[in-house]
Image (cartoon, rainbow, N blue to C red; front, side):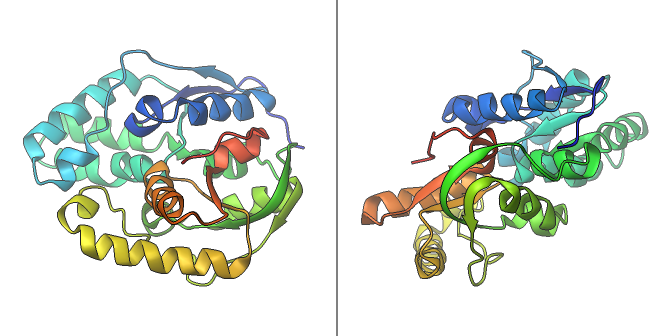
Length: 250
C-alpha cells in the first residue's frame, strides 16, 4: 500500500455530495487521510457552474467559475469525488474565459491541479491497494465525463479489484450513458428513462449486488430507477466502497 506523506489536498465536495450525500465527502476524506494526505475543506466553495453552463447561461457560469478559481487558486491539489465536476473545471473553464487573458491563465493553472478521486489515488499517490474491505459482487459504470472527458477508466478498476472481499465483474456497455446528463434528464425525461432502463439491464446481467461509479449524478439516476423497480442491487459511490463504509446512494 503506497503512502505519500506531506501532500496537501483541498476537497471540492460538489453540490450533489454536499447537499444530498455528505457520506461521500466523509468517505473521500477518510480514504485520502489513510494515505497520509492532509485534507482541507474550503468553506467558501460553491457550485462549479456546470448546471448553468449546460443550460446555456454562460454569464452565470462565468460568475460561479470565477468564484471557484478564487477559492482554489492557491491549493496544491484539488480532489473531488466527481468526474463530471472535475471535467467542467479542466475543460470548460478555459472556454468560459477564452477572451479574458488573466482569467484564462488562472483557469489553466487551477485546472492542472484538479483530480477525480480514483485518478488522484492511482496517478498521483501511486496507490494500487486501497487497504480496505468491502463484501460483495461489484460492477462498475463508466460515467461519460470521467471516461470520455478525463480519460479515466483504469484507475477505478485497479482500486476496486484490489479491495478485499470484492468480487469485481464487468458489465456489457459499461461506458454507455445512463441517461442522467444533468439537465438532459430534465429536458428529455422519456429518453433518459429508456437509457437508464438499458443500463440497469446490463447491471442485472452481471449478478452484481452493487453498482458503483465516480459520479453521484449517475448513481442517483441509476439508483432511483433501481429503487422504484425493486431490483436487488444497490448504487454506491466508489469513495464509500474504498472507505469500506456501507452507505448506499438510494
